Amino acid sequence: MIRLSWVFGPDKPSFIDQMIQRARENEEITAVADKFSSPTYTLDVADWLRLAWENDAHGILHLANNGGCSWQEWAQYAIDVCHNLGIPLKTERIGAVSLADMKNFVARRPVHTVLSTAKFAALTGVKPRHWREAVAEYITAHVSKK
Image (cartoon, rainbow, N blue to C red; front, side, top):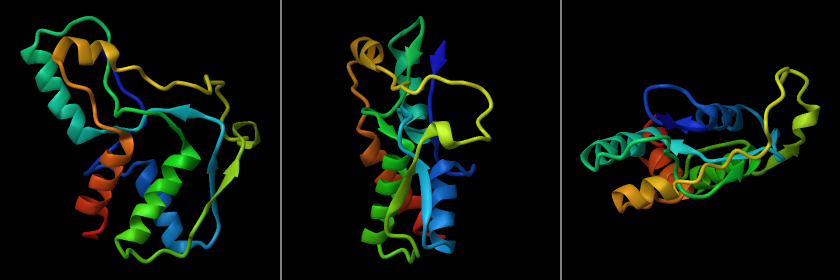
């Protein structure tokens, strides 16, 4: 069984794509600052699944890029990468909102769901790269070309 969180990548719009689009259109945008998890790049997942198969890894495996962040931190980093690449945006800073203020979130969910990839690393010998590296690669390869 494979567990993923906060998935992003080419071919399907994700939170990152939505935030970048909002930053293109608006001077002020916000994101939740008090919910934390692990961004997960789909192209990395494809490589990790192959490694898990080749190493006969079994059981419950967490596949995610290393490290954890809030939605606000994830969005801010994406905006910073866009600025560094010269992608025109109206937004400079992502404002913070609390999960409690998000009235459209009906279902209660844990606020800290950062996944540990220690078991995957032990079974395959591969430690997933940091989410920041994956986000920068994604934006460079896919967002900057649009």
